[in-house]
Image 1 (tube, rainbow, N blue to C red):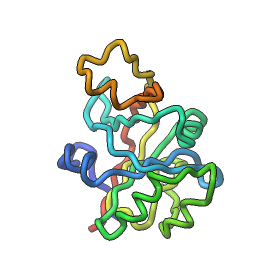
Image 2: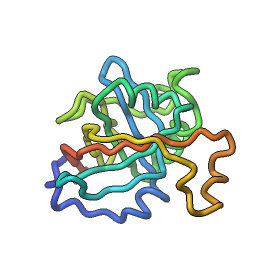
Image 3: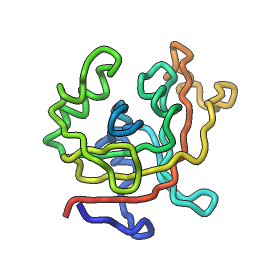
Length: 167
């Protein structure tokens, strides 16, 4: 993996989130959980580069996002789509889904949270802000339909500390 200067990071943000997905991991090498995420964004806020992710409080990863200060986002080549899907559909509460996925946990370079050996892109982030979604602020009726259980996401902003990509 080679480090990419944050100011030189280039991505197709809509396709990378909606079509490729990421694995969001929170925790440290001894205590972590991971899940697939398909909603988020990148940008600049408070003069810092950021990645924004959303996690429902019903997800096991939420507990790790609350407990730890850092997280990673990893994207994968198409050959790992089945593993990414598994991490998005099974809960770490019920099984060792990481082992079942066949993916390999590795230490990250700038944060305590692990990343994945098979990833082709890794963003290492430190949390800088969170806020709970307020359904009273949804302006599109179709959005409220995404929450039949009223389990509104918590929004996390993470300052991007490092970006790494395969050659």
